Length: 105
Image (cartoon, rainbow, N blue to C red; front, side):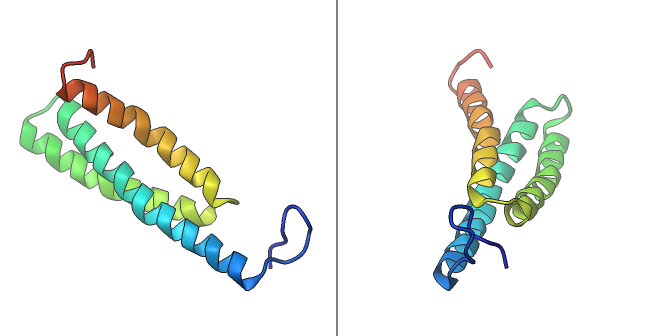
């Protein structure tokens, strides 16, 4: 059983349950956000016919969702996965927003 970083004592049942809940939330919500933004970005920016770009984006989004879900439970801390997922999603969301609303992207 993993030990607490601050005290070296094993975590309580509540702490372990909250850790699993946080990882599940990051995997579900963060994975969905990353997959949706990835699909939208690829569909918009791939230089191919629109139908093929959408299909490619959708197929790639399954891999992105799976990667976030796997990393959520493989990483040492759930907060680290949440940080890296948001670091992936925020620039992509900003680029899509600017592309839609007349920005430079």
